[in-house]
Image 1 (cartoon, helix red, strand yellow):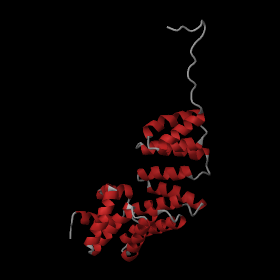
Image 2 (spheres, helix red, strand yellow):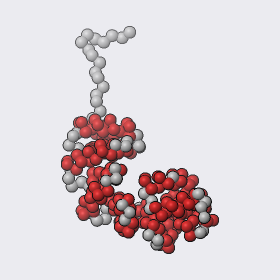
Image 3 (cartoon, rainbow, N blue to C red):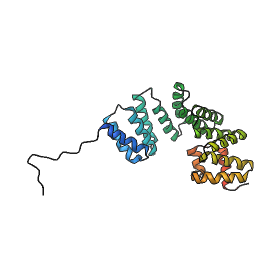
Length: 249
């Protein structure tokens, strides 16, 4: 057995520095390891209580773990620390949406858009809020603006097409969905949307072809509740896809 010299004590391992902790928390968050990320962010905000980004990032993890009220509290703190920052408003709006607080979420997104009318994320999220309140003309306008502000924003373009479908503008919706599929052949949302539209117009064979691709790419499109509550499709496309899946005439 080895013995230490008298008066010598083994040094405790040094605690990780704030930058190291921040990087670990951020990596865990980005990789979806939210249960690991939360205690790391707790340490970061304890060490740096004036760091707005730490509070906002912790709020995002709180939301991912199913606690939107804690998420809103963290985003509130981030906004107090950095009143001019758009990110906490965007993140707080997302948490407010999770609670169905549509006017509050819309206010956060409009706060961003008053300062940057071309913020594609705020435009898209506001479109989801408008759709959740059944204002599909306003939702369509927001989705189209988001797609215009960020040309590669495929989900915004798909949402705009689905809003057009909801409003009975099926010729435009079909063209938009076909254009999306040509550009992004593995984009399940557009293929599922086109499936619903083609089924409604009676093109069963082509609908089945697109559905084979869509369902293979993402099986969640079989779930009506997911489409309505999470993906936030309009009700007319959801009903059309449900009829297709039930093989209704």
